[in-house]
Amino acid sequence: MLPRIASVQNPLRVAVFISGSGSGLNAMLEYQKTPRAYLISLILSDNEDALGLNYGSKYGVKATAIPLPHTQDKIHQRLSHEAMIDEELVNSNIELIVLNGYMRIITPLFINKWKGRIINIHPSLLPKFPGIYAHRDAINAKTNESGCTVHLVDDGIDTGHILAQKKVSVSPNETIKTLQEKIKKIEHQLYPEIINLLSTGQYHSKS
Ligand code: GRF
Image (tube, rainbow, N blue to C red; front, side, top):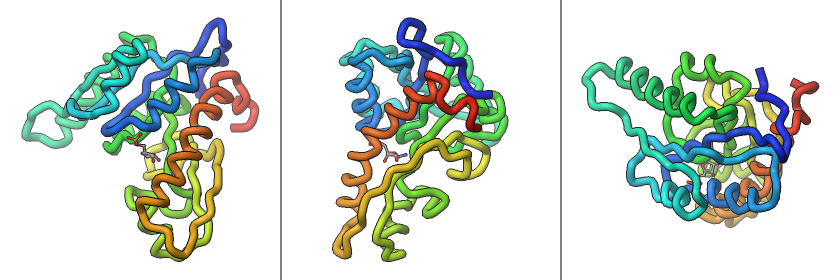
């Protein structure tokens, strides 16, 4: 089930999940200074020290850290962590989850609850180079193009239905760092645009 079709007057309430610097989050918050059919209403991190949490006070958005609870049983730890996150989402009336540099693998239980209402951006042209080493893998493969992919999240690793992609060229002397920077630039344009299209119902007849 995709999110409700929203409008500028009645925007979709979005939570952005981060774990680190939040450079993508910053781009989204800048983008929504002009009227959009979605509103970032919550910034959520699994990492209390995530620098991106500081954008909350800068842009007047609730920002909260929910770290993994301390417990011996790993399965119980993941499930209770996600239960706390889910409670926060429900309390904040969130309608769409946007993963942006969130470094945890989410359980199928959580994904099934939010299916169609949880999206991710990945720094490669999926299905090429899934996983956390996408830039390194693209360079090692000596590919001459890469890019980014916005996709619905399913319970595989970067396997969900693709909503949009954007390409960049990869030069022979590209490094992981230069490729990261190049891809981030296009991610910062593409992700907010696609979230807006999803919010206005542009994908509802297609998926
Ligand atoms: C992006 O490159 C995205 O593709 C990946 O995480 C990065 C965003 O992290 N999933 P940040 O905004 O720089 O913390």
